[in-house]
Amino acid sequence: MDTGYYSSRTGKLLRDLEVTAKLARGYVAERYGEAYADELSRDAREEYEAIIPLIPRVRGAMAGALNAFLRITAQEVAVYRAMKRHGKTAGEAWEVCQEAIRLRMEKFPRWKAGLLTRVMYSRPVLRRMRRRAEAKERLRFGDFEVGYVMGSGDDFDWGVDYLGCGNLELVKNLGAEEFAPYVCMSDIPLGHALGWGLIRTQTLADGCDSCDFRFKRGAAVRISSKTPAVQATIDRIAGLPDSE
Image 1 (cartoon, rainbow, N blue to C red):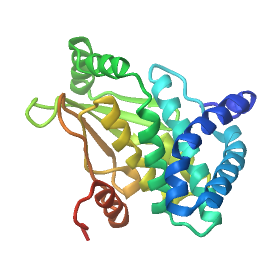
Image 2 (image 1 turned 90 degrees about the vertical axis):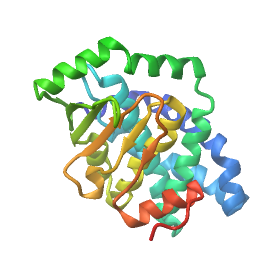
Image 3 (image 1 turned 180 degrees about the vertical axis):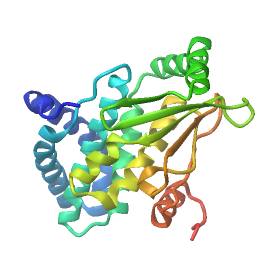
């Protein structure tokens, strides 16, 4: 896995951050005030510029998706570090990040999301997942290590166990370990927008032995955390009674 790859692409990545920051500015200003919104935009950009050379680049068959997730994680850590400067909590930082992702994904073409869903539940993909599950394959892509499982179709169609996670390692390397369980919850707005049908009950960042991604076509996104503060934040955003 390469580091330093994105150094020559700093300008492009900063412009991408600015797009997201503009979308989320109204939410930040409403919650914390106009002055803070300006400060957060400036400070997050400064943090992200420092992080960019440290973002790893994965090679291999899953490189496109994994590298996209690593860049999202780096942006989120930049927001977390910027908000921490001002005494904000990890939970507050994640609420800003998840709203930013939600707004960003509203711009994602629906036809493309539909196409991705059809592909991930297509017969060729299901056959490939079944072969990998039956062979008990474990594949590595940088700091990511994955294994595959098949469901009955009643509970889930197919799944991936993440036994190692590059996003978690990046967060740790950036000194933001308390933020790690929140970063995993970014799959909530992503799952809603992309129609993953994702069900997940545990993550490595929660201290579990794997992240149990399970996919069921047409299912609602059901993601929970074993970290009480994170679950309380999930419930609050969803408008559910406090789980604690």
